Length: 157
Image 1: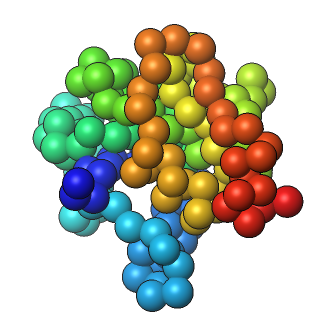
Image 2: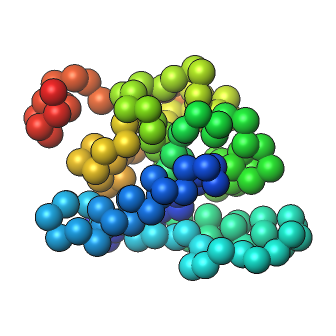
Image 3: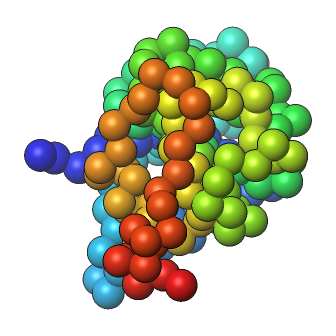
């Protein structure tokens, strides 16, 4: 099986976490990889319709939508929420990546649109994110997480 084609959604305030994921991908000592469907470069435009069209093209290439969930992700409606709507419309697998380290869906930070849709929620860490990217099968409802024993098998405490 090839690498999962993934679009990573995030608030602009969390771009450094996305860049860290790219660094994991480049580090030969970290077993982490995915086919990145992100835009190749930043769109220098104020035209919302154009930006959304370009993002939709990239999301349409992806089978997985991974969203970095930070402190303000829940309130980002113009693009981040819209990207999630497109991903759900396309039936992408949804992976919620909690930047606060939580292994569960967090009501306070999780965008309501991805609650109870069959997504998995994991902390921002290369081993568990890599596992979710390559092994998660989208469910039809509820919020999902890996059991503590699974984290222990991967070397987490």
